[in-house]
Image (tube, rainbow, N blue to C red; front, side, top):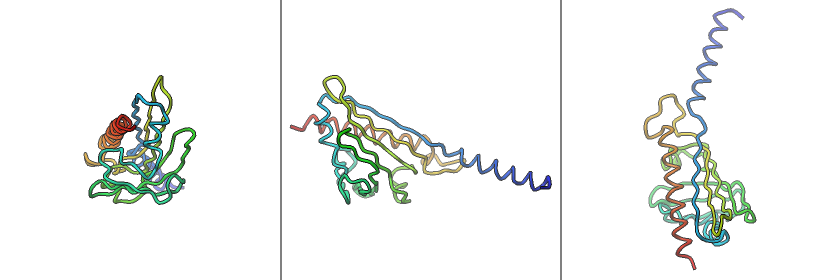
Amino acid sequence: MNKALLAAVVAVSATAGAAHAAAPVLHETKTMDIGAVPAKVWAVIENFGDMTWVPPVKASTATMGNTPGSVRTLDLGGPKLVEQLKTYDAASMTYTYVITPDPANVKVLPVTDYTSTITVKPSGMGSLVTWTGAFKRADPGGAPSATMDDKAATGAIGGVYDAGLSGLKAKVAGAS
């Protein structure tokens, strides 16, 4: 291999590596203690098709309920977000879902490759709810706009988790 060709291969490889490194996998985790037994908390979130405990969600439906593969559509009062259930374990009070890879979803949340898990566990006399996600920012390029960068992605997901956990706590408190 001549030196010019080798230099070109190295330059292309370095550029590809830098572009890939520009969009790291980001993580967000939020937890909340709720003063109710886990079964009562789980009863509010166990139905994958009902995400109305998250304040921005006006309505939600799922194609196959709590069966992995079920597709959930969240109506946010205009935009819609589409998610798919990956795993569901009622005995462990946990499920994992992804946001489907549709460009319309990026207009709602500035993320791609999103996977999230929500879990309810006993904690003292109540419950600890953990909501965690892994994702990439919407713009994988080296110089994303402020609305599509790492900060926007983690801020948006953190905001959803905070609002959702607060909504869950309020709904559990209001449940009989």
